[in-house]
Length: 405
Ligand code: GLC
Image 1: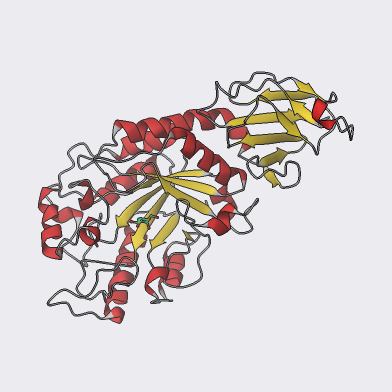
Image 2: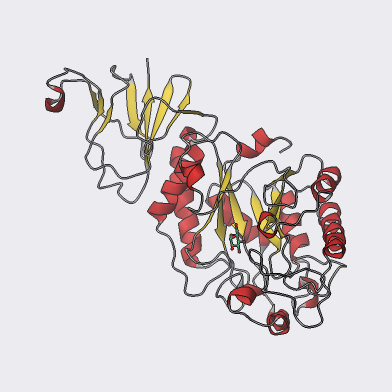
């Protein structure tokens, strides 16, 4: 996965938010959002003992979802390190579990040819050198006894990044978080990453403006929603739950239909999709999240040819709810919003394709260019794709394949 192209050919990745916050099971920013004093939050480390942690099970799930890379929270905002760092005692190897989670995950990923990326937060709510001032998702201010000093903290990040880049084999992606929201920079860190891990891709949430791709999150970025084809490399991210990225016991899960629409919308426009689950404190993924991933994988397996090795075509269907992808003479029409009738009219096409099928189940689709009552004045005869099973597929995203002459 040396180049950006190879990365974007991978299309979907599994995002994993996992750390101490899984134990209370409320939100990954438990410490900040429940205003929990640092020392009290840190005591969760004494309970971290994920007896069912099995990196192969995570990879199995990613594969079942049609995903082909993985990004895990090496360090979230709480500062807890999922690897055996020498920079702090606030780490997985100082919990009852005592094992280097990242080492085990990296071993499994390398053994199975699954590219691994690391999420790493620039904000650190545990380190006493971090200058908390309430910017973005920082703590409101220093806690008593803190000695905020950005340069010193950058040195710590440098040591942590060096550990991450030299001990765990090849890394595909470095997925910074929270850099831009704090208005501080550390321009030497991305060059360090690129030197230690040649070919690594770095996202745009770091501490300098030299990232390789942008990361629109959930539906917070209208400027991305407006683009019919992404002008620059985009990896969209979303969680299976509406509230939290970490495990939340009482989560409000998104509907599978909604997520399929989002996945399709991003992939059809040329972006990658990084979909997140938060494993439980024992290390397993809950059945609802796993079920959502499997449903996505089932759908993706059927429509995959419309989303891989294709180009996005902007001028065939003007309705932004129907992105079109193309490979040679084959067009794929993505119906990511429900149709209001059992037909789709394509006014830019006036010849019937040689063949039309519904990719989701392979059934042939009847086509017609006969005059429709609504066009009696102008006599236009747009291509009509007829008898579409809109009710049967109301819970899914239909993709139509048209083989043109
Ligand atoms: C949001 C959340 C953060 C999470 C991130 C993933 O910014 O606040 O906790 O890690 O999304 O993109």
